[in-house]
Length: 537
Image 1 (cartoon, rainbow, N blue to C red):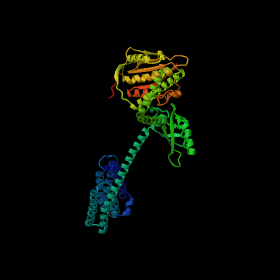
Image 2: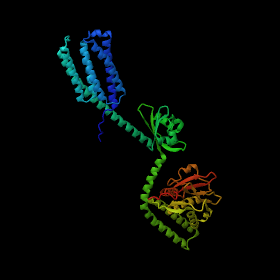
Image 3: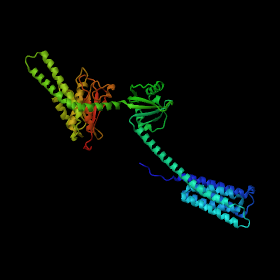
Image 4: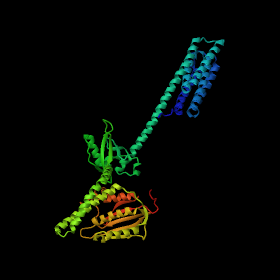
């Protein structure tokens, strides 16, 4: 797309006009020197001393006024150039008549004034200025010829100066046009480059990949927001203009940079940087072939892992839909045959135990298939207004009826008799089932029964559900991976329960987080939308 043609900037024309006015002041100073000092003797005796003195005396203040006007006035530079050119032509004609010996020099200096005026105006006005100068030159020639003390000046000189005025006006105007067009193009390209630089800077700042520019002394010269966040700086600290030493902020990364600068070999082992010990994959590139400045790219390993998990889950969702039918049919046949065999009187106790194992594994396999299908379906939530206290009370009653005896350690706590919320009851039922089952299974010590509390409370305007146990708790090394799919510490688990629970919470506009309990045990907190939240479409 072609950009519109721009007019020359007033500041550029103003600078040219100011320089032209300064040159006029120099001319006025030289004229005053010739008229009022003994140096005028070198050009001969004046024909009319009073006229020469009057013109020199008037021209100097006019030139000074034009300088000040060009420097501080906001009027059109072209108009000022035309007014100054007319004054210069009039002064040149009068001085040529008053000082005949300086006629050739004055005509040559006037040639520059004509060219400078034509440089600032359109070609028509430039030629008009040249024509006025030629008329003034011819008029002074006729005036000199009619004078009693005529100065001997050849007509050829007048004609040559006349042609020169038109030539210099044309050349100056064409040259000025080319210079202004070049300047406009340079300003336009500069503005485009500045815009592109701002866009590139914005893109780099908003990139999710961290970018650092590290000099040979280990100081960070440039860094985008993602890199500073990975290094542990908050957004408020990023605005502070301060020197940042990479060795002080991330010693392991600084050592990796120095090792790469020495050997040129990249180590693909992830690094943990920042106060939160975030895993990153650093990549390096030299800014200049022989320079010491290094570009460091920091890929968030957790983001890469999440992207890989998303691809894995998407592929598994497509695969599980077609595989579930093929697995379920033979699995149902095995389970049914096992139940029939268990009813037989000819089965020994040892074989009956084996049949129990087969049946349990069938149920476990069916649970895995159900979990994978749940991920593939990604059902949309249908939130409803409900009372959390009543819902949790009903859930615990149903859970106790269909669960083993260790559900006796399950209890409820509520700060009020009613707590309204907005959530899909089917999803909340599934999430609570997962959390309570995990708490009963893992939240217990070997020599004590499980004790699990489902607490209902409000934090501000947000209803909160907490599932607490009094078990050994969760190690810090495991907390960061709790909600990752297929992560489990049990040989009998699938690693999908907490992941599915968090996905169901997100579908309802809620959050599921793990909260450490200082006194021991574990707490999973569900923060739900308030009753005044907007129902999703």
